[in-house]
Image 1: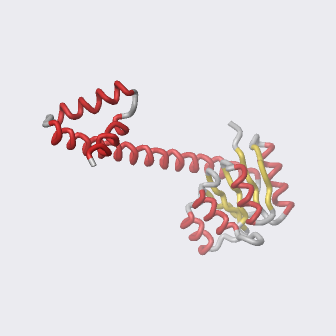
Image 2: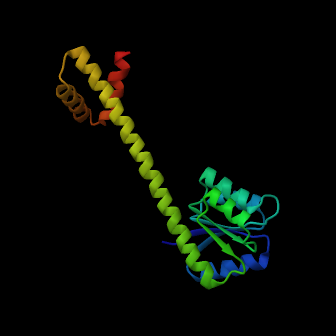
Length: 190
């Protein structure tokens, strides 16, 4: 799979260097920006697998851009680049939740492994978010089914097992999830 990357750095030579390294390694650089504002636009347009952001950029700095990318889920992962290795920048990067932090000057030997790790971490986080969402949906469905069973048990004097079987039978007959049948039962009871 060819991963999509956005590069944002206010130094054209640094951008060109990263572009050549990444394209040479088989990545698809879908956009380059010289400031944080353009970097956000590129991420909104392309939803890259990775946003490579310099911390010190005009208009919006890389830390703020990274925070917005994370909040709006505009890229799979974020890798910050900087000439500064100060603790305050590292702490802010950790707080934002970026997948990597690389101190300049950038070399092929330092950039490519960090890009791979950052993309893998981003994919791992996406999978975890999907798993959590799926678990929440399942729990919500189970709650609805339990409430619907209670209504059937009270209204039709059914056992818990019989109420469950009734919901399941309607679900199978209609070709709809049991959660949908439970919603209808709850709507009709109110």
